[in-house]
Length: 59
Image 1 (tube, rainbow, N blue to C red):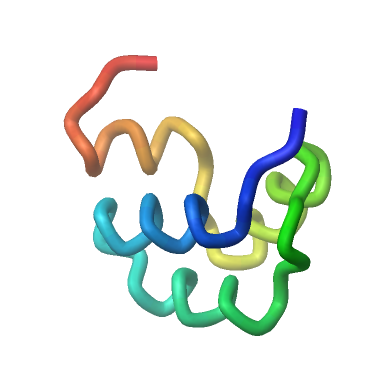
Image 2: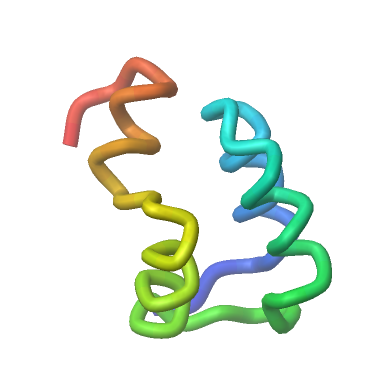
């Protein structure tokens, strides 16, 4: 599965991870696979569960 960089940026902003969103603009390719996304987000200390928690959803 792949994700669009703009969707990732939007989600990061929505979850309050603004520094990571700025980093995503320059560090991620247009389409990102899940493994690359998990590796990239780890350097910002972000997990899927952290994003879901910030947005108010359930995993």
